[in-house]
Length: 231
Ligand SMILES: Cc1cc2nc3c(=O)[nH]c(=O)nc-3n(C[C@H](O)[C@H](O)[C@H](O)COP(=O)(O)OP(=O)(O)OC[C@H]3O[C@@H](n4cnc5c(N)ncnc54)[C@H](O)[C@@H]3O)c2cc1C
Image (cartoon, rainbow, N blue to C red; front, side, top):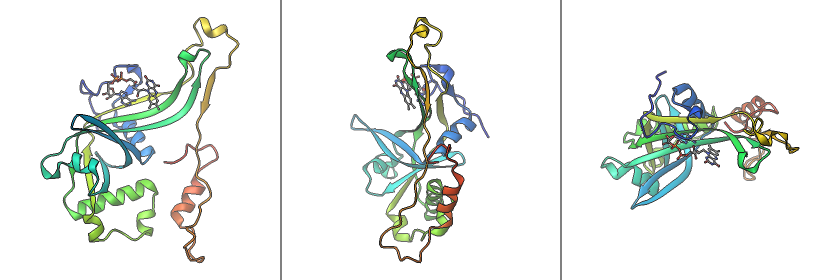
């Protein structure tokens, strides 16, 4: 696994000790949730669109309707595309300090910069869509009906190589335990965030003999009561 040296524009300046550029840290954050924000500038106006992503090796994919403004703008309609930015953020806990000023949160986040490239071939799109489906729920690709040619044609997939990437991670307690505020009789500490999946709710239109699939059963049985939610 390669390490990505930070370019000047990707180097974390504010609280630089929280920055990381190694692929293990970056990939772990990217793979921890399928949700990201995709940002671009169109006609001078910045937009940050919440969407799904999937990482396959050294590439992050985003996808959507071929009519999507964000995807059409970033993909460039075959003329090279525009610079984009993908961020992934995970909230891990509340950091409650004695002073309001020192309140914070624990988090893991990643920022990727680069030009997104639209996938042309049906085979490449299919591979990326499999990665999306598996990023949402491992095992689901093989359980569900797979996309037909019409659906593939209606879907745009953009690829961003992981070349300029930074992670930023905050862990630990509040920062005012050693200063003048340390004597204040105010509770301080961390409230960790734990998330878990609930009971599956079958589509009311589902015939009663269609059972909860193995992918969902694995998801539920894998989570301990203390596990960190949607992966
Ligand atoms: C859940 C969450 C909550 C946060 N809450 C706050 C808050 O309330 N106030 C606050 O000031 N900051 C908060 N941050 C940190 C925030 O994301 C920025 O890092 C910080 O505001 C510094 O911004 P800057 O533009 O000065 O960064 P700079 O350090 O100047 O940014 C330079 C480069 O560092 C990298 N970088 C910066 N931030 C991040 C990041 N979060 N993840 C990955 N790479 C990064 C980017 O590549 C960027 O181009 C929060 C982060 C998360 C994930």
